[in-house]
Structure formats: structure tokens, C-alpha cells
Image 1 (tube, rainbow, N blue to C red):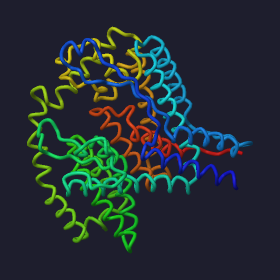
Image 2 (image 1 turned 135 degrees about the horizontal axis):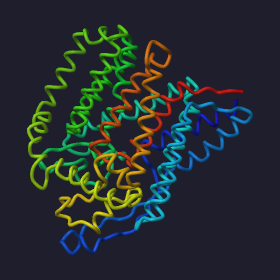
Image 3 (image 1 turned 45 degrees about the vertical axis):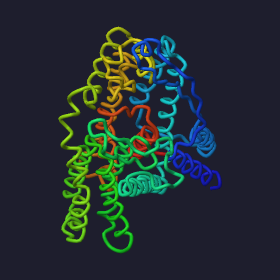
Image 4 (image 1 turned 30 degrees about the vertical axis):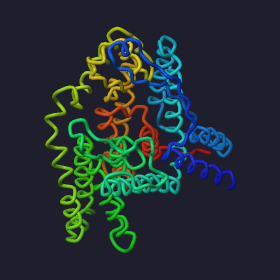
Length: 439
């Protein structure tokens, strides 16, 4: 019992440190001679880190092995495990061949950490109590950050608490299409990140609202849902707006079939509160929607450099059978392409397929896609029909996970903490429903 308690405590501690991404950072300056020769002198450092969550994860695994002595965990992930192992092997080959081998090996280590989180999540969340508290912790964190986003939007900048990232003078971002428009991010500099986090847990938050209608808990949950929606709009993340609409509509449709929806959306007070939130944020909505045409034109258009990054990724895959290394795209283009070609956006590709493909080549990309095809096939198969897997919060988590896959098509979310880690944890929670502990 004591060992089990320690294991659970380590799990919650690991989860907690992931939220704030506390780590010891190390960086090595890198300036491309080619980019500098064309006037792009911005320094792009190699960044390495040792996070507290890594250390806690190691301790957690030892604790699990000790706690599970004499028991075996039967998990329906054989096909997925083979594909993950093959992808890691291809990543190793890519790292050996990469001109940026050090950072590629480090990124491969991070990918291995994600895989471990996936398996650990399956083991830990096979316990119903741990599963419920895990989901509630994730929702609570995202909701609190959403509240901070709303306060930042109202103030027009940071509110001055220590949790806010102070790396930016006017915390948040000002989009290139509308430079005077402030986009808050809570404790993160990049507002698209918390927007994707909100979508990840938005269906689950709606589920909790639907199942806790009355009393103080119901009031708190409804206010939390409104805060999440307000924060999502305040981030100005247009792609995430669209994804959020799809997620909420799908969630509403699903639970409508379960006859649990009408009790909240026929509540006049809740409808009025939603209307007030929309009216207050109408200028934000109008500003971002009106600037959509600009994003497809000119050097500052957001979609311009995204499409160019995909084109470069295709070029890399056609000339490098194993890619150029994990998470080194942004360094590779500095040395091989003129900054004007990619509009001086030396970042990871804003598309997960371009990220994986440029890193590991066509072979690695094929394995990567195959893994997620198997994952989605298994999950949808398990959720088909009226069974335990398709009941309760599980469907909401599946919809939330789908939002991550969608947002990863337009943002560089393959190696972006804490979203990357939390997506693997949510996936592990979903798989935990079909895991069994066999003595």
C-alpha cells in the first residue's frame, strides 16, 4: 500500500512539473554563415535541457517496477509498440547521418521520453481513481491558465504575477498581419500553444459540465467552461477557433445522442453568459477574421511560410532517405536556403507530417503515419457501439485528442512542451481503458 501511494505521488508530481516545464537549460550559439551573408544575423542557439519531469519519470518507472513485482501488465499495443520501435531506430540512423547530430540525438531522447510517458500513462490510468484525478488535474491547470489569459487580455499585457513568462516585454504576441493586436498566452509566450491546450481538454470540460448540473460544483464548472471559451477566443488563434468549433459541435452531437445535452443548453442564464462573452470579444473575432486574406499574401502572411516549409520538407525527403535529423529543420534551412525563400521564418515546420518527414525521410514518415492510423483504428473500434469504452468521459477525451492531431497540421507541435507530453498522456489514458492488470 505504501509503495502504491509513493508511485501515485510520483505520477502526480511528474504531471505537475510538466505543466510549468521547469528545467535546467543549456544552449550553444549557432549562426549560419549563409544566412548572415544575406543579412539574417539572428542567433539561433541549440537548446538542451534537463527537466524535473525527466528525473521524476525515471523515479516513477523504478517505483512502478517495484510496485508491479509479480504482476504483468497486459496492454493491447503490440502493433503500436513495433511501429514506435521502428521509428526510434530510423531516428537513430537519421541522427548518425545528421549534420546536426547532437541536437538530433537529444530530440530522439525526448521522443523516447514521450513513448515512456505513453506506456506509464496506460499503467497508471488503469486505476480508475488515478485516471479521474489525472484528467481533473490537466483540466484544472488549463482552466487556470485560461483565466490568466482572460486577465491579460483585459489589461492589455501581463498582470505581474511570478508565473508569467517574463522573457517578453509585452507578454504574448502581436501578429504580423495586425501588429497592434495583442494575443495573450498566459504563462506561455506563444498564444497558439495554450489555445491548442484548451481544445485538448475542452470536450472533457464540457462532459463534466453536463454531468454536474446542480449545486456549487455545477456553477464552478460552467464558469470554467466559459473561461476556457473566452481564453480560446482571446488567443486570436484562428485555426484553433475552427478546431474548437468542430470539437464542441462533435461533443455536443455525441452527448445529445446520450440525452445529456439539453439540460444545459436550454438553460437561459448559461446562454446569456455565452452571448455576453461573445459580445465582449467581438472586436477580437472581427480583427482576426478580417486579416485572414493578408495571411495568404506577402512576406508576412502566416500561411505563406507554412506552405514554403512544407515545400522544403518535401525537398529534404526527396534528397535524404533518412531525413536530416530530429528537430533540426530550422538549423538545416539556415545553411541550405536563402532566408528570402522561407520568408526569414527559421522555425520547425508548422505541420507534423513535415516535421516527421524532414527528420526521418519518407521511410520514417511512413512509419509515423502508420502508427497514428493504427492508433485511430483501435480507438474508434473500441468506441464503436454501446460499451464501456464508449461511455462517460472517454469519448470526450478521444475528441480532445483528435484536436491535437488537427492543430499539429498547422503548428509545430511534435516537440513542443507541455502539449506534446500531455497529448501522449491523454493517449495513454484512452488506451488504459483496454489495459488489464493480470496477477
